[in-house]
Length: 99
Image 1 (cartoon, one colour):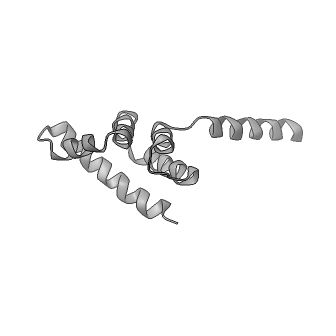
Image 2 (cartoon, helix red, strand yellow):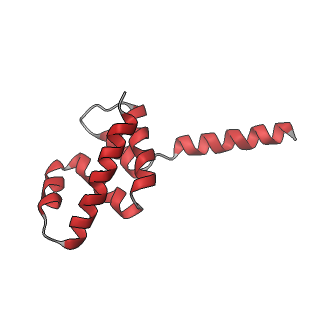
């Protein structure tokens, strides 16, 4: 029984480590040189603060920072609502993930 529990725990840990989230992947691939631990941390915060669609949009900002500016300045109501969620996520991530 103990061996089975150990195998299950190992499988869960291995699977979790292999599946990086959308934001974590974008962070790791960006030219900003963020550490793996930072990218992982901001993904954990995103998992709490942003839905899947929001995460996809936020991940696009890593490649195209100008898109973030366009989104922030948009008069489109859905983009305005997204920006408020995005801003809250960014503030929480800054507090939670700063070294």
